[in-house]
Length: 133
Image (cartoon, rainbow, N blue to C red; front, side, top):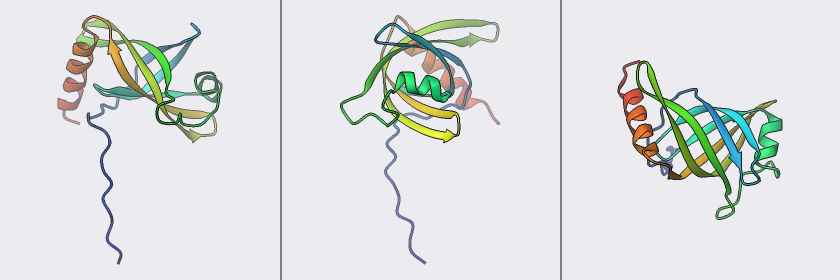
C-alpha cells in the first residue's frame, strides 16, 4: 500500500461553519447577496448561484495569484444572544469552485476591516468553535 502524502495546510485560521447573509459590493458599485458556508478571522467561503458567481468572477475560473478580485463585504454577527453588530470588510476573491449544477463557492480573503470589525469576527468565530457539537 502506498503511503499517503501529507499536504501542507495553507489555512492559518480555523473556519466556523456558519450560514450568514452577506452583501458583496464589487468595485463598480454593484451589490450582490450571498450566504457564507464558513467564516474565519482571515476570510469567508461564500455560497452563490451561477448568475451571481458569473457577475463576481466573469472568467468563471479561480483568479491567478496576484490577480485577485477586490470586493467589500457587509454582514452581521451576534455579539450576544439578542444583539448583532454590522461588520464591513474589504477583501479579495481568491478562489472559485463549482459544487453543484447551480451552486458555487467563492473564497474571500479579508484585507481590512472597518472599526471593530475584526474583533467582532474574532469573538464570534471563537464562540462558535468553542461550542460543543
